[in-house]
Image 1 (cartoon, rainbow over the protein chains, first blue to last red):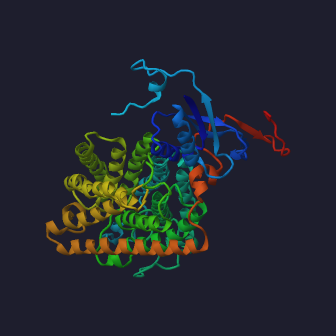
Image 2 (image 1 turned 45 degrees about the vertical axis):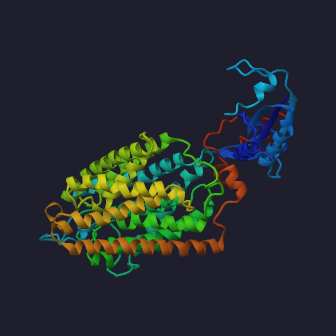
Image 3 (image 1 turned 180 degrees about the horizontal axis):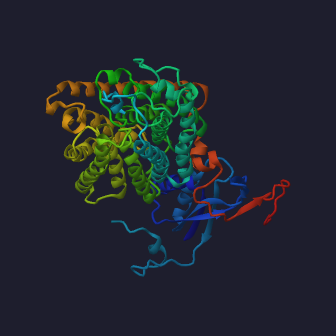
Length: 117
Length: 437
């Protein structure tokens, strides 16, 4: 059981969602974050004030999956988020101690398995 | 405008009327406000990353069209009685002074400025078809050429003594050059520039419905100057057009509410904003010609084809992004024809429509409703192809993805300032003043 964290370009967020959907990964959270990687600073000017924007808008996906789903999730994130330019983002896979589905109290494996209706 | 064609029975040469002049000065300012209001309306309808670029296209229209109008457009539209195009007598505003134009009662300068604000908003309207992907520079070049080659020509045909007016076509406040002119040009522009890269693949939603409603409200406010000023006086036709500008959009709103309810069981805010625009456009050509009763009927009935177009268009591959064709082209077309049916001489003092005994008026209107879209569409299509041959019309895929605000203006509409490093604030060197690293 792993937590897959993908930090991607906001304009690729929809492509990532589509790719995850195609990989049959359900159960996703996403949030808007700001971060700095290796990409060039963007220069903006407001009246007389010129600034370098050191932080870029990113979207952070968090997907908790069972072990067999780790690779498909990582592949989907890469496929959806890649442009080939600096700034495409990062993926982190971290071990997950416990997961609980609040509604039923199910834990771990069954908690990260989507309910199929 | 059409009042100019009236055989005004005046014993002496007409003189300046201070009341008329005062109102026309205010009306001109009201119409100018509409272009900024349109910028707000359009900005709300696009995605957050394109807010400023969309707004700036309207601001650029003010800058460009005001200048081209003064230098050349006004002369081509309003100098002389040429059938297809005006003369060059007023190039650079020569001969435009404090004396009235023809039989008018306001200074020629005021007339020129009032008409100029119409040219400005028409140019701005077309931007709605190409937002979120057209290069800012290419749009400005297009705007300059279009304001002269398309707007001035159509304005001459309708208002400047050109052949459409000579054929008897009536247009109170710009159904021909402004509404049909922008609507069908917008369709051509959308076809030439092409769809946004995510069109038809992702949901591209309005990012701020409050801007949309506020923009529509300010447009409606400005439209009282647009229609109410188009009598060029404080006379009966101005009063009639002013009142009809209240009634028609209100009726269009009610129709839109009902249609929204039927279609989705909810009355929508962006639908309401659209209905305000549609109602104002519907009454634009007919404002000073039809009774308040028929103006209400026009709002109720005229909203139907526009609504149908707005529902149908997104199912096509044509990314005419902000539905300029539906809200302006189709509504202008409807208004132009409607006045041919229901104009009443006892209200307007000029002409009756088909249902009041003059079928010929309807055919004159039908002629305008066929020729105007054809000219606007073809001329714009060719013009944009030519501009496209000289410079790229579209932003790169990368710029389109990142957003037009950052790509073309180096600004964001909703900048937070987090992570921003100040560069040389006191202008005495390219030193980084605050570097967290």
